[in-house]
Image 1 (cartoon, rainbow, N blue to C red):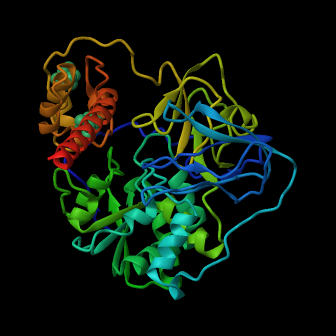
Image 2 (tube, protein in one colour):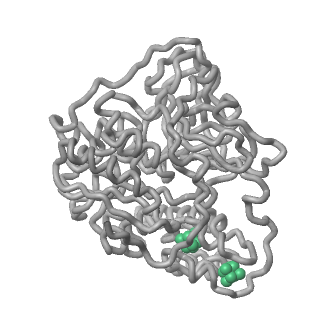
Image 3 (cartoon, rainbow, N blue to C red):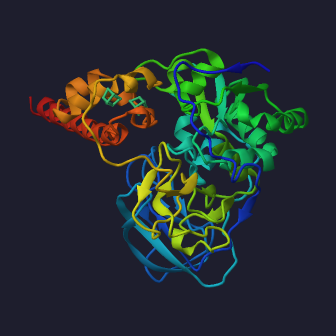
Length: 453
Ligand code: SF4
Ligand code: SF4
């Protein structure tokens, strides 16, 4: 099978050996969970429960008010003890529903729904009602992704199983253990979108999964052509834009989305969650993730109820070597976020918890830019990180936007290669938020002026 890739990219130490090939182990329900009410990309949700209410696992506890939102469900049965702001995995405070377990094992799931004998609208409503969003990290509501505007012609669905971040092996474990659900989820998405072609993309360090998936493709009922696309093990191969280029030869235009190149990309874990939402009626209430890193004595792949606090993971699932621990990361080391404590809950988009030693982290002290241009040579989106950074330092947001700030996929490659250890990607994350806020404020002001005139 031919191996494709994109231009540029980094050959990183993959550091997956500690959890590669390990099964997903089920974490017992904890004594309490703190479930963030807002885990998606769009407007805030509205809590549906109050302190003292009893809830069942699977019950909807936060309603989604708009199209860019998804509801949130209880991941354990018990009593609502508090509804209060807590630190979340993105290191900001957000409203959480704290549920204390009462030993109940009842579940309130959705009724199963045959995806091949329901309307497109019913299928999209199911995906939304099950609270499904992009589990690869972005948190974008899946039903929205599967409803492109009529003027966008989509002809390829891509299942993203590249998992290019070091340490993480959750997607590999999911493809190993649930290939039938992966193929079913892909078939559902093909039916909803009316697209007849799909590619399951993975890096060539997962070649051993090809026969497993090919077997499912032979057995499953496939509404079109599904193939496997092998990509070189190269960071950030799992980025949507990179995967599209590698597998189809197409480029997502500057300022555009995958749909602008005729593609919809869904993470393999998301596709499995979609299949389970139909066959089991299960909302997104559990999360598979990798626990690893040099300061982790028990590296493994686990499944935990969403809202489980890191401190409540039993030691057999996450035993920390405190003498070595230097940093706790939600997600992988390239795109993940460092959190200050173990009081942070696992969320729908938590792909891993990495407990890093000092040796595994890069030096924190920044030096001056030495104009080496390594950041430019290694940016997979062909941007000029040094120019974007200089523009942001000068508060020149217009120039940063012209230099492509909003096209940055926050892969962290520039930060990784920068010899001056300048925290480029961290600045781009904040810069993008500030730029978007300014653009929204400018549009609101323009609308006000138009309304008055
Ligand atoms: S973080 Fe952004 S600017 Fe830096 S290498 Fe990645 S895409 Fe390019
Ligand atoms: S890699 Fe770092 S030091 Fe080199 S040009 Fe970019 S920002 Fe400057």
